[in-house]
Length: 66
Image (tube, rainbow, N blue to C red):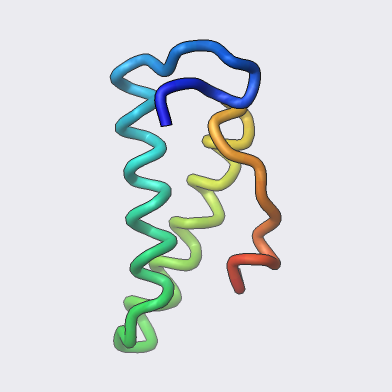
């Protein structure tokens, strides 16, 4: 993705933030130890606020199982 939901070009920092968010979503689907899974889900919730606030992604946490 090279533009946000408003059509503005993503900055390098925004691209990195979105990549972190996508990686956390992928990690939530992995078979992790309980403490790691809980930490990843908590981190995903925080990053969800970041990417939604920057209009980089729009989805509900319940759709992600978080």
